[in-house]
Structures are given as structure tokens and as C-alpha cells.
Image (cartoon, rainbow, N blue to C red; front, side, top):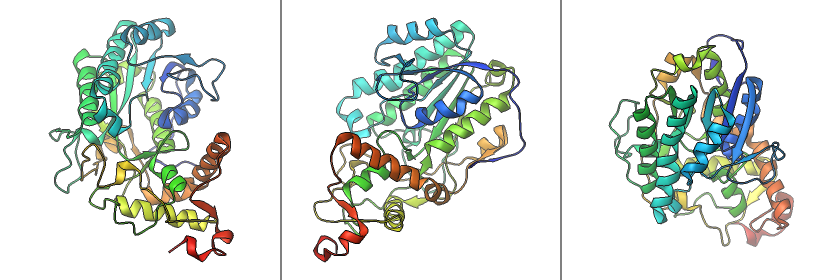
Length: 351
């Protein structure tokens, strides 16, 4: 199913040799599928764990500058897609040096190497580069002002890329979730947070955005750029990419739990803890206004993502399946979720 709206169909003029960094992450895992239609994808990840590319997955540690340089030079790509990074906001606050090395320094090195081998670079950034003030959706031209170590590291990476003059595109997104990696949806499923818990921070507004639609849109952007990829990205710059609409963090949680109940699961409230990213007790400060204005995405590439709740509804079965698979791999039964029919027989488990 195509989630994004496009202005016209386009064919691939020629195949690309694409170095995909972070191929086992949320966005990277989806890119591995969408980009293979555009050419040869060479995946790289910090971990060599289970994946569709397990046999040929290259290893890279973004905190190792020489390792990053050697990877790019050994592959010789026409396009570098960097979907890797340290994304745990509280971990970044606890170890800002590591966050800066991975999110701030490494993207600049990738851009330098892109210049060296004549490649273009696509990099993913975050709404955390803004201070979260006001209520208007952020435009790409608005002043930045990150309030966390994570946000400062992401901004440093954006600026480092721009400083190299490499042909590039920085896609700035928000509230990403997907079938792989850690995210709010799967953490809610695992922890079974009740819908009215007082520790849910309800003062942040944004648009939950699927890693899958980001990956699909990225592939379309590459197609739109056409044969002269480096020339098309020479102007560089930042483009916001997020689903349409908005919700609060509590509204997001309520929709996840509603979909869970509709799928045959119901949340238990006993002992539940909300993920730190959405509590009032998180270690790192979070922006309150996470809205992104995505008009440039349509103006430049004729791409428009659909409403956040429509995509979440469509993708929820896959998210639920991925969560169950993770539980099976860990050989741990769900601690706070039970089949709905069993919960109904134990009224004391729910409010």
C-alpha cells in the first residue's frame, strides 16, 4: 500500500550504488526494502545481528572516525543514506560526548567522504533541534535552539554536513516509530500503560510518523532527483518530513491502547510505567511544540505523507506482530498484557 501522495509516477533512470548506514534501525530497516528497487544496496550497521542482510552486513561504529572513512572508501557509493545515530534522548543526556561523536561528528565525516568520492548524502535529523516554543509548526527557516544534549548533537551533525558543501539532503522528522528498534508504540505494548495515568506528559504536541512511510518517501525523492543525483542535491538544505495532523503524547498513547484493545489485547495498569520519553520525570528536557511544517516536501519533491492516525491504524497489526516476535525471541511472556478474554475473567487486573 502506498502511504504517501505523489504528484506523478516516475521511473528509475539508472540504478544507484547505495551505502545504507544504520540498516538495522527503525528507518534503516525499512529503507533496506524500499531502496533495493533503486539499485544495489550495501547495508552497514553497528551490530551484525539478525536481519535480511545478515550475510553481507558491513560493520561500522559511527563513534570511530577512521572506521567511517574506511567504510565509505571501501564501498565507493554514488549515494550515502545515513539512517544511524544515537536516538535515546536520555542516554544522550547522560553521555553527551558519545552523542556528539555519533550524531554530530560522524555525519560531517560522511559528507566529507561524499565529496571525495563524488556521492550525494541523505541524512535524517530531528525536531529536537528546535526549542519547542510557541504553537506554530516549525519551518525549515526558523531559528534553531535545542534544549537537550540529543538536540545539540543532531544540530551539530546538520551543520557539519552543510559546512562541507557536499550534495546533500537533510530530512528532519519527528516521533518516529516502526517494527524494528525501540519506540513508543512497542514500549506501551510491553508495559501496558493505562489510559489515564497521571505521569503521561500531555503538554507535547506532534505527529507520530511511520518509519515505513519515511522510507517510501525517501525512495521517491531519489527517483525525483533523477539521473543527476549529485546535481539535484547540490542546493542541499533541510526538508521536514512528518505525517499530517497532530496529537498530544497522551492522545498518542490512547490511540495505541485503543488499537491494542481492538486487536484482542487490553492493558493492565498494575505496575505499569510509561516510557521515559513521554513522562514528566525524564532525564532530558523535551520540546513541547514538535509540529513540523512539511510544505517544502511537497514543493520540492511532490511528496505528502498521510494523517498520522490513518498510518498508525494501517500499520498496527505489523507493529503488534513485531512486538510478539521480540517477546518470543527473549523467551519472556508479556508481563502486563494478557489476551483480552483472559483479562475479562480477572477483573482485579484492570481498573
